Image (cartoon, rainbow, N blue to C red; front, side, top):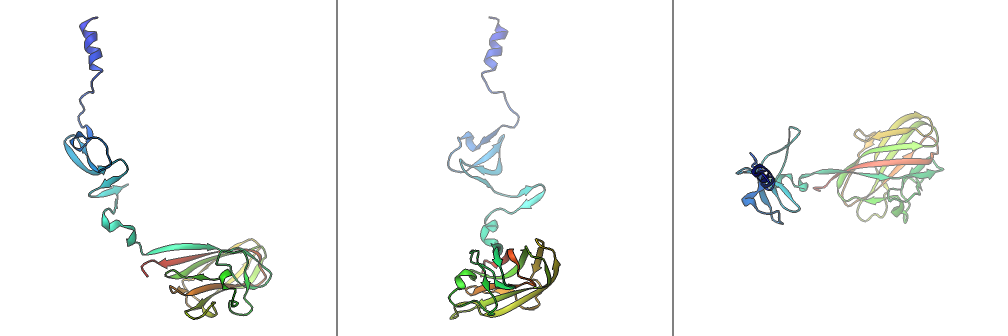
Length: 224
């Protein structure tokens, strides 16, 4: 074997010298504790372990700064949004929608939630918040006023019997057509929710809606 062949084979056994080798500090192994990632002989702001990546310093994504450190903790979030799907069949024009997750609505003809049946159409507010939006879709064409009423019960009252807000929307729609109701400007009263109270929503449509799809969106202040 020629000397050149020996040199060639020996060379392939060793890693070539790199200009900027990437390694963990002190050239240690990847373990459970965080270690700085180094480029050549300089440490980067990035630490890495077997299951964690930590950045000490500034971080940008596509040119936009991303907040890091304790100031970016999840508890800095003030609001979150929640949706409730309340589909039902209605043979009456005025119904309390099944906010508790059941599929049966309740007649709204009495003007209040029926005592002893609030568990089907009411919910207990976990935070202060607001009713933000309601989406309505009926298998029956509707022409007239779609009225949404928000009912409340405070302490010592079993079921929501006090109307606190009304939002009227004029509609003229074919069957199976979506209607969006926003509560930023109420016809009367308020869309505000108080933590610890019980709430129900009544919908009065121009015609009995039969198969009906309703989704409500709620905004909660998780600092309350």
